[in-house]
Length: 554
Ligand code: HEM
Ligand SMILES: Cc1cc2nc3c(=O)[nH]c(=O)nc-3n(C[C@H](O)[C@H](O)[C@H](O)COP(=O)(O)O)c2cc1C
Image (cartoon, rainbow, N blue to C red; front, side, top):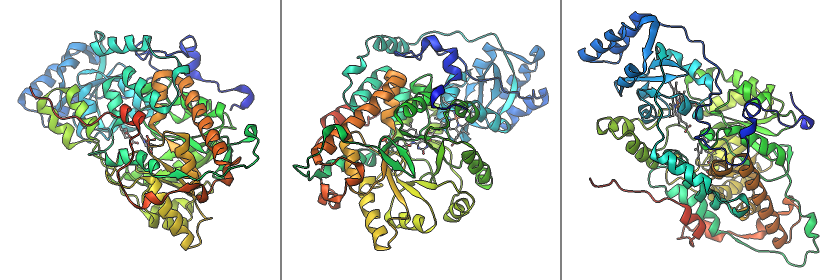
């Protein structure tokens, strides 16, 4: 356990101490594996034979797998692995072990395309950028173990990697980063196209993605003058679900931090701690819970984000709640309620189609964008609420009626969110839902029973102040933190937090307010929110936004 005095010890950071800070390149670190070897029992040759039958392979496939029986001592040469590179015959290497993932590929919750990208290759680096080592252990029963890899893959630097290296060497200094959009523009140049597409994508035509942000341009301020406020005493600290923090915003929970930077979620955790800002720790953390929490100080403020991936996880919800309760830093648990299916993230799929570049496999990418999630209902929520003292919150609520229902069922907070426009396109901007929810709660005298949070499209301190005026207790941000990390690691995250804190305080001074609690509806004109009209352009945001593209002609 660590306390403030100890300051954030980090196991991986210790190993890589010399490399920390100042734009550590992903390329430089690509070969560093932080995973301990999973102990996977070797399967017999009989299983290997049945693997090709299981995957519905042709006679040719059976002959191929029979030829694999010749490998002495279960060792599989690189060349052999490379030949299993198709959707119906797909082997991948993880930590020097070869797996047949042919029967899993179409069930992969991250989409078939991600496994096709690494078909017949060493998938270790890409796997660990998104998954904790535990995922492999949990999913073992879905894969077929083939044997140990013999030899190693030849590594050649791609054109894209060389370009990224060059751009990283020319990256603007942090002092030149003034806004959150600046981070996004830099990230676009220093991330692989596939990673940027994964982060940036919304769903379908991305109306919700864009409107999330533009909703804020429909709200204008009504400042109060001559308030006799000492500018140095303007304070943006607040209380989120009973926890005192130094800012009314939090780092939202999201997958894929290590795709941005080798230290991934650790950058967020340490920067949040130093700035005393709330952090929502994602379920899909690339660190295992043991490793991640082993260096989290006891006095850090965190929320735990969780989504149920299987019906078994719902059945065993007590284990999840117990784990959350056992971490002294965790002050609340947020369950996703916006994942009944996975949105059609077209920008991401389109990029993957280019990367896989095998037209016969495209169908799998399109029909299996992502896997499905299990049934999760109000009665499950009631059961969870009645089985823990930890505040339970719902992330992904999208209408006032559901906020009222949540309040009646003892849920302590909701995040009005459409997953950053990644789920249902044309779901309304959370800022609009905030106004609706506030009114409905008041009608039923429930406004003091539940805290309202929202996320999606927040890019300025003024966005945050507007949301607080309209009744939000706090707001979350997702992509901006990924973009900040991509260019600048932990320092980028710190800088982002500073920018937002300063923007909020600046807005408060100009509004004639010195404390967050003083913000209320009287400081904004939000009449526009009732009428969805074309918004004024936001030059920085628009310039950073990548429009959807069309297929290229041959
Ligand atoms: C045998 C290898 C793999 C297994 C067993 C596996 C397993 C899983 C599981 C269980 C999930 C769902 C997690 C959840 O919803 O809680 C998932 C999601 C995902 N996986 Fe994998 N995976 C594998 C390989 C990979 C590889 C190689 C990549 C990247 C190239 C990848 C990228 C992803 C992504 C991006 C998601 C969805 C993240 C999100 O948007 O929420 N996976 N995978
Ligand atoms: C790359 C990426 C991965 C995400 N993964 C998750 C996740 O695993 N769980 C979750 O609750 N939300 C996830 N989110 C949604 C964020 O928590 C948040 O709701 C959203 O990013 C807010 O919108 P913004 O990016 O415009 O700030 C993800 C978002 C992005 C961009």
